[in-house]
Length: 235
Image 1 (tube, rainbow, N blue to C red):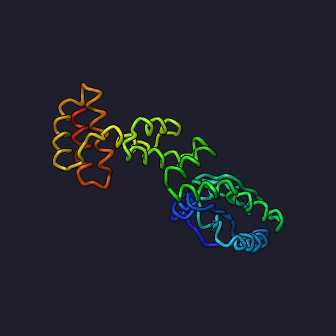
Image 2: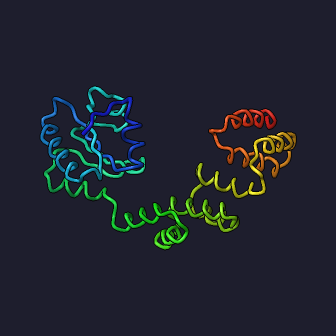
């Protein structure tokens, strides 16, 4: 169990829970039941050999987290997966209950199979993922990207309709819609310059401009400058 504070809660709990379930133990030094629960919870988490992570937060020293959780009584335990609180309880509990609590956070056999297929990353494996769960976000995005890169644009775009819009889905869609672009920096800059005079009144030109920026990505030093030029042209 590692100690987490208001300052690193976002990184150690929210962000980390996208990789692995995180169990948060809210406690205080004066809390008698906390001293009973803490070691038991740590024992149960350690028994999972790295499949879950446990963190401790002293509510007296970290009022921000305490307020966020609306803590009224401790010990309080909250489990996070994929950036969200998914389970929890208050008060000291016995080891069997803690084992059941932790086990509910572990990936199922089906989830493990899906993870293996996504890790393989080939078309057959990714299609197998979607046979199990047709709207599996990671599977849909990976297969759509693969199809677009292979030139099967319409099929890739159709797949994206199965999942909510995200940064990655926008990038894939933009890549599909700009598949006719050479990608050469000078040519892209020239096209953006030409589109800039049309974006205010031409929906297609504006979409093309935005798509080119999506494909360039935030890591391209030109992207920020072109976004500023777009804002100026529109407003």
